[in-house]
Every structure is written in C-alpha cells, then in structure tokens.
Image (cartoon, rainbow, N blue to C red; front, side, top):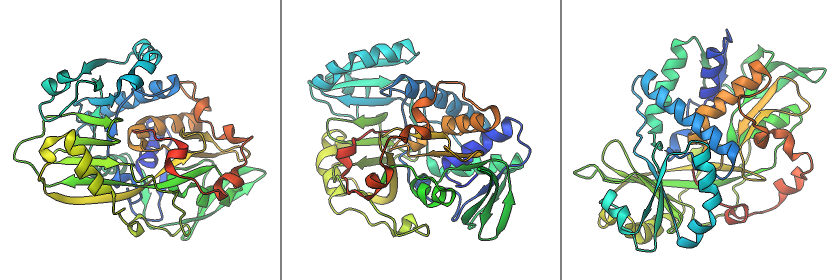
Length: 391
C-alpha cells in the first residue's frame, strides 16, 4: 500500500480480511498527514449514478460496522440534508426514483418543515431538502487513529516517512516497490496517494488526467449546547455545515473558485497551503442565513487540504493499464472520506479476486484511453469548469 490516508488504510484492512498474509503500508509522511485529517467527513449515498449509489450504500454498511469494531470511533448517523432550489429539485425526479429503487431511505422537507425538524437551521419557503436518513458524518481525527490501531492489531506493517522512489518491473509486471529506505518485494502494489498520484504512477510510466484544488474547512468554538442540525450540503448557498462531536460547527465552501493547484514536486506537504482570504468572510456572510447560531460565533481553527478531481469528476479505482499488479485508488472530488470504506473494499477485491462485487467500470483507470492526458494536465482550469460534486 502506497499512501497512509483513509483509502490506503481501508484497503489494507480489507486485504487482510480477504486473507492476504502480509500487508505493508508506506507513506512519505505520517498516517493521515495528507488531506485525510483535513476532511469534512460528511457522508451521503444520494449520488448521481447507479454505480455511485451502490458504492456509497456499501460505504454506509461499512461505517456502521466500523462504528462497532473500531475502538474510539463512532459514526454519527444524524442524516445528511441536501438542500436545493425548486428548479434543481424538479429536475432531479429521475434521481429520486433511482435512489428508491436502490434502497435509499430519504425524506423530502419543504420550507418550514426543515426548521421544524432541525431548530438550528433556517429555511425559506422556496427551499427544498432531501434528507438522507442513513447518512451523517465522521470525525477524521478519531476515525484515522482507530483504524490505524485496528490494522496494527491485525498485523499490518505501517512505515511512515518512507517515500516511494521507483518500481521493480519485469515484463510489465510489478515485482517490487523501491523506497528511499530500500526495496520491498511484492506481487501487488496499490497507489492511494490521491493528490500525489502522478508523482508515484509516473514512476511506472502511467499518468491520470486530474486537477487538484485547495479546499478549506472552518470550525467554530464550542457552543453551550449541541447544535440541532444534521450534516448539510447546501447547494443554494454554496457551502456545507455539520455539527461536531464536541458541540461546534464545521463549515466549508468552494465559492472562491480557485484555479487548479500545481504542486512543486513529490515533496510537497499540505502544510504549505495558505487559506484563501475570501473563504471565511463568505461563510460568515452567507451561511449565517442557514445557521443563525453562527451570528457572533467565535472561530477556533481551520484546516486546508487538497481535493483531487479526475477529468470526468469520477473516482479512479482499479488496475493500472499496462502494468500487471499495480492498482490505483484516487481522485474522489470532495467525497474521499465518504468513499474510503468501499474504495478500499473494491481495491482489495481487484487485487485478490480480479473483479468487484458491483459493476465498477465507471471507476476504471482504463477509461481515459482516448483522453489527451498531457494536454489536460498542462491546461489551466478553474474549479467550476470541472463541476462541483459535494461529498
């Protein structure tokens, strides 16, 4: 496993569960030290395609299971409210039919019904919310250590501050991974470094077409009482908000619409990212209309990470074309945390079984065969040009 973020840790867990006797996780930094610990942690299964809904449903099954088996972790199944205008809602009728067919459990709330259900949310009469009842949020700073401890109990070897610098390839097949500490023999390698993907895969002669974007989350100081609201994806006010497990509110936005972020090289660290000066003022001015308790709230801290969007804004999960034994799991837009249980499972199934329990062709790295990857990587692009898919 290359990468000790949530996807890498999840894949290691599922590989061991499938009987793999030796699993080694290597990371150039620390466990969760990329963008995983910066995640908003919101989870919903109400996605735009059947593949994604099926995948997210499995993620929910696994989050529920992890809540039982990971010491110190709890899945906060408070629901996820997806807010939209009447126009957007009307156009999404086929999606709601698909969600029901695939077992989605949700309610539609209109106007005042939203505030009646969640007193700390304000809503206009024209607002419509689709409440995903199985969903909610996780705290990354509790989930990641709990999963790491579980892996170590399962016998997984975790090597921090060990960078991958090459692959040992024979006749187009992986025989080993070379790090700055030496070589590791293996018949399978999984690259799960997300924003750093091409820095690693290019060592094996492969690159994917994706762009990285800066994304920020802001957290208030604690309130005297727990906020009375679920996780909220607000497609009207262009942001999201959720409670935390210590009575705060966590908020985020993509309103600044930054251009793609170009790393200076494989040694890049997320600590080098700077906050955008307009992000917090926007949140204070706009999301206070959704959560009035933000009026006058104290702000405690913020986190800055990178989200990674593939050419078609779909995750990339599966075998790398032309290199037997090499796999990739990356580019989850802002939904990497919600995807990680199922992405790890699907990657483990690719490695051990040669295929996955659901039709996962949508995620195949081979789908970019007709894309001019080098031209896409070289072109400047703004976030809204690619589209915004939230959680």
